[in-house]
Length: 132
Length: 277
Image 1 (cartoon, each protein chain N blue to C red):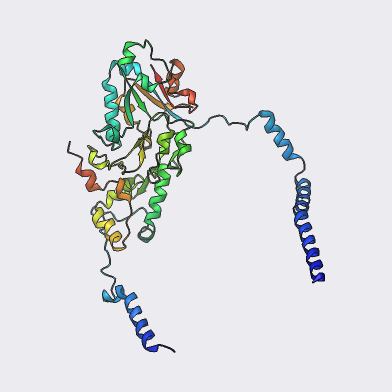
Image 2: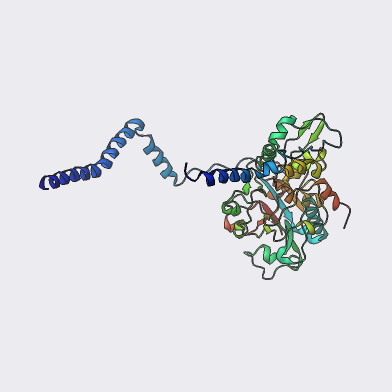
């Protein structure tokens, strides 16, 4: 091998540099997020927890298309409680704290969904209920 | 050298012949195959279509929601229209801007001459001249905005004929605003949130950069309620709402009895909003 003296240290430096984010954090990925369970004590979601964890964004898209395009606004009934399809009308009824529920994981996973550009969090909606 | 040139010319000639002949050969063989498979029917179909002059149009069916605005009532009680506008603004989180450039309107007021530019306003009745007309999206049966939208963010809902918006898909190109002959669409030039007076927690707001308009209160209809503006005028008959295709509906009783006009009907957009002047 030619230039062994340069290539091998060079490779080592390269590998160390590329893996910097891994070893700099002590081989840990940070504390796992713990989204807050519904403060109202609701136990059952519209779908099983595992499905919601993996596919809630798909469900929201389906609901959006149902409501806006297919004129299918059928209510979802969970343990006698009725929910209208919608982020503000179903999800946030139980998961009333967006910062402690949604943001918890979204920040950890560094995803930036644009739901709240238009949709109102319960906190925001309440902010302008009495004024004016 | 000589023999090679002769060989080259031969090959070139045969290749050229094959190139010219191949398409003709393919066409011949395929057309015979088609003819043997289908025989006469395609020709018969063509003849039938030609006899009608155009593809046969199906009769309008299904629910088509519409509205009759009785301006005589609103002339008597102009506050009805104010109430209707206020109800709509509250139901849909519509921002109130001070400058007209940023204005967002779903239902608003306009003088007769602006609402019906095709009608003469020469020697117009004084009462009509002074009254503000209620104007909103016409929910056309053949909406030009839907044809203009490049992302299908605006579309006609098959089930009820409402021209609806999916704000998730709107890219803010404003083609629909240019296409709408009624000026029924507004663009969010600024973030609307600070200008919304009171939030309806069951309805979203919009964001900067999307177009919005009246949705005939699709979200209220789903709950079995009437549109917000109709509810605000309840009991007065100023605004009647219902299915234009249902001969028994209240709106059809009104349409059968009264003389109504539509905005700019000559454009062929088939508006679903009718006016009794």
